[in-house]
Image 1: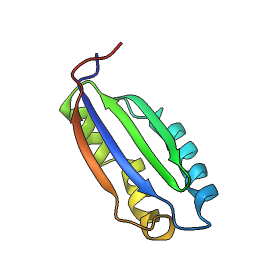
Image 2: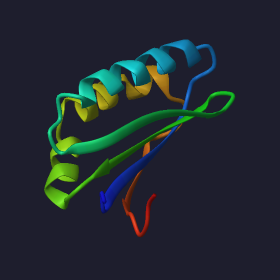
Image 3: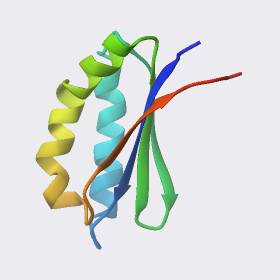
Length: 97
């Protein structure tokens, strides 16, 4: 069971929803190259509200992801795509199925 996770809340700028969705799909593809990333999910929560939820077996995998290519791409696009600062939550997974 993956014991570490990240949850990132994203609010698209008006008119940027399609760009955010395309970015999330690209992020899923990029995550396949990360050995330490167990699961990666790009989510649409509500109109204009998105999130990323990803899981890791260990702290090293999570740290590598936070310093990896997806994080760099996300930060490079943040001002263009999002109307609020990114909220990155480090989460401990207590149980799964």
